[in-house]
Image (cartoon, rainbow, N blue to C red; front, side):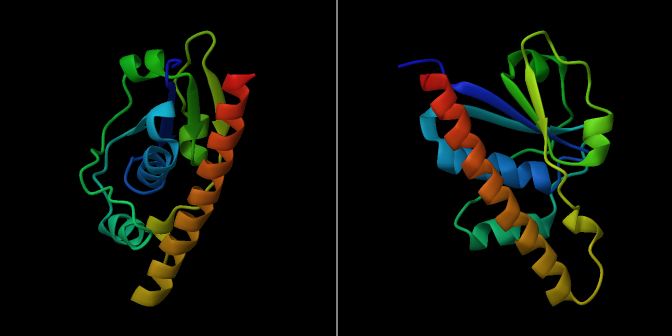
Length: 145
């Protein structure tokens, strides 16, 4: 069996979008991937992100909210930035490390009633799930080529 692909999801605070992406990549990628998420800063996990992921059958409650480290960057085969701030402030990557950007809206900035806010979290969750599924399909096929 070949070495698992190491994917790092990078966000501003590692509280919502990157946490969701990490959870889905672990759930959908199995042993074919090693997954981490981190932030330019660490803001702690958002309880609404945990709740909407639980609705989708993925438990992210035990994942950590961490700051990106040089070691994480050195280990990554692919870095996925999931917000504009992380894309603009992404540290310099080692030679050979690829980077892609997903411009996802921040559900933590949603306003309105509780139901309107949770609807924004669900919309981002569903977008993240579709993007992770497509990413894994493309990357794992690429690795077989």
